[in-house]
Amino acid sequence: MIEPEHEDSFHLTPLDVRKQEFRKSLRGYEPIGVEDFRMRVADALERVIRDRSVLEERVAALTEQLRAFREREKAMNEALVAAQQLRADTRAAAEREAQVIVREAEAEAKRRLEEARLAETESRSRLGEAQRQYEAYLAGFRALLERQIAEVRTLEGKQG
Image (cartoon, rainbow, N blue to C red; front, side, top):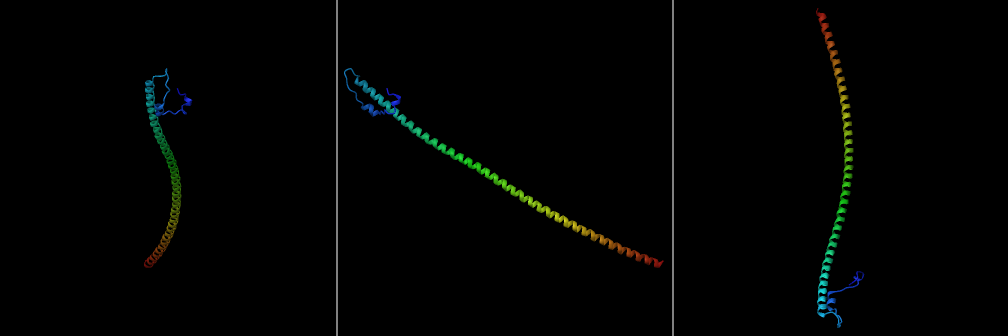
């Protein structure tokens, strides 16, 4: 039997088993039995080697698939980080743009408020001027009427 610690250093191929020859002795093993056993061991060894080869190919394929999955995972993680960064950058840009819009709206509102105040001041000034003109007109009309009344009285006094 092969000891486990020497297993790596002992390499046996089916051909080694088939070509192995034993010395003949008087009390030795039956040659047909030994030959039959050698053939069965060689066949079993061939199956084990084929199975091992298939398993090694499968391990290689699975290792490659695992490598591909890890690359995809890395790429997805990088894409996720990039998307998160883009989201943060977009949010920051939107906040900056919103602040600019708010400042512009506030400035526009102040400008319009100032325009409205100026218009109000101008309207009040015009109203004051119109009231003064109206009062001057009334005063002038009253004076005219009073002169006319005085003339009428004068005329009445001369007739009666």
